[in-house]
Image (tube, rainbow, N blue to C red):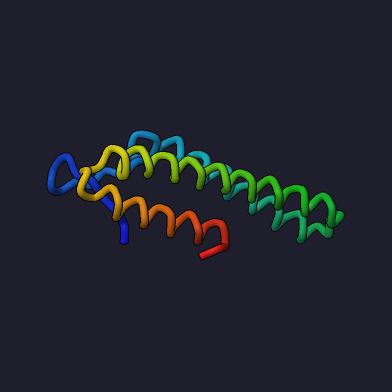
Length: 103
């Protein structure tokens, strides 16, 4: 279930809405990193170099995920309606557990 908050009934806002352009820019950069890893494999590059690039891409994705968790906590949990905070906290924790591979 995706939690939303609205300022008007037709346009939902998310915790990341104000940062959306920057978030998309980061994701495109990560996409470029992954394409770079693909080229490294195609070019038969040295395994430790490829692994280093994979680690960099994973770290970048982790940073995006942590930012999304923070934005969701601030916008949808803390900034959300008090009667929804417990439910949204449970949803957030479930998502964090899945992200960490523990849920």
